[in-house]
Image (cartoon, rainbow, N blue to C red):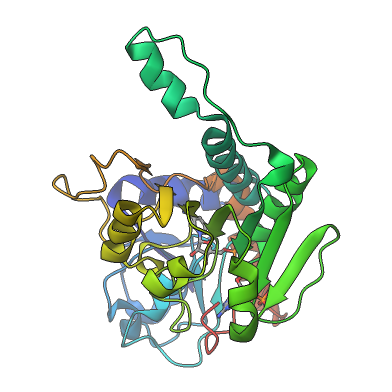
Length: 309
Ligand code: NAP
């Protein structure tokens, strides 16, 4: 049996090399050089062509190369009943927390304003926000949101979190479910989205939600582009309901050159880099799951396909 890797051409060979470095005896193939489709029982995928997985009659595991699985669940021909796994590892929450902390501190301490002042050789003191007066709200307290919440709390920010089911994290004010969304939003200075993309969360960052935030709140979206209704963000920035946004993910990636976000004075754009996956850290998870599969043991890091995360 064999592992098949379906990912960007530039990255595929590197992933294959990482897996082979752990166990040289494994049969690892890189798409589209599949060989006999009946050999493939385990795939490692990131944004693969829809319908492709249907071609492998003996497929036993679909492993996402990232934390999200929305790119897999959008496949209308996804083989049914095959377990789906995702990446859970140290460097991902670490790098995501670094990014959101940077975005929060940049907003509070006005670093981008000072950079503009420097370009104009302007010596001017701006009023910054005090951490203790700046409540940060995080939608999603999973491996990424939970880590960011704890780290922002340690920096002195009051932190609220919103989840699907009740969740307790020491020092974090917790809300859950649709009924509590309005209360969660009502006193935030900064809103961070770290939700998975599911039917329940698609387009959740919209005009109605922005209206429930205090006027002048700041948005950080590091989850998925499809969480955000882009026209509603532009409208909220124009009206002053939101004071700015830091965005790492977009409906279309790469963000088209003529997209209004690129040149908007209140938006910071980064190219989907908030959380970094290191192949050498993640590859052992895949090899371990492959071993488990063949030993008849339960797979690790499986997701609930029905729930979408
Ligand atoms: P996770 O561990 O599965 O956590 C998801 C969190 O979202 C959980 O707390 C869950 O609530 C909550 N949630 C899910 N559906 C909800 C709903 N309908 N209402 C309220 N809360 C809901 O996910 P993760 O590993 O932290 O990753 C989160 C997302 O970040 C990924 O799915 C991906 O889209 C994105 N991401 C982005 C990057 C990047 O580079 N920009 C990198 C990695 C991941 P419960 O605790 O109640 O289940």
